[in-house]
Length: 278
Image 1: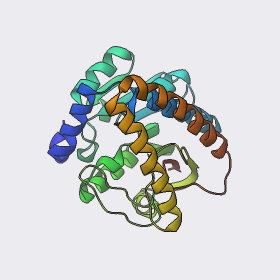
Image 2: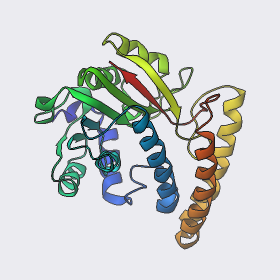
Image 3: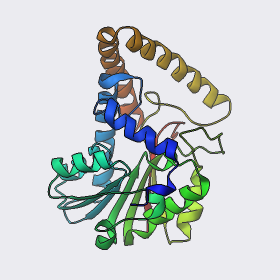
């Protein structure tokens, strides 16, 4: 299954998240509760469906979703009436759950840095490959490069590769569980495979974590640190209070971000979706 190329710490982290956290928090922002993460994923849903409409992702497409997790994006492809869906995830527990929830789709457990396992590899190439908030969890640089290349190789000529990441403008320090690569690093690898960028679209501006550098980033990072401290602290001390607080704050912040998504001037320091065409 290729799991040997993922660091044991990262692999164990994801296995533990799938075992202990709720459906949204395990794939969202850990520590901010289910209710806040539900709002985050409502915003993601609206953003993704609009993006899919712009790029004609529909029932005719053959899809590969890398890092499927609880199946959020698989469900969105189902909402688009896509019939041919394949998925991969590092967690065998996630794969079992996905297979039960989406019996008409095909899933396999793997580390994308090692390549796609059968039967997913046998179904390649795909019209659309999505890697949503997955690649920055690969902390080894060489493994990350292999993972990007493996995603690209699975895309058919003329097809799309969707990557959700923060894409900082300059390199940022690597942590034990996250390594954010610049957009230029992504584009350089994919250019060798014949990809060009066709869209860079912000998902979050205020309602999710910030990654970057400089004075502008410092202001947003301070805001996010204060917000996490208040909501996370409330959840730890009294979840019965923290979850309603998360619901209210999530509704307010994602409403603001939904309006800001439509502007094309600034993409911010948080999550964006890059759409590459081969």
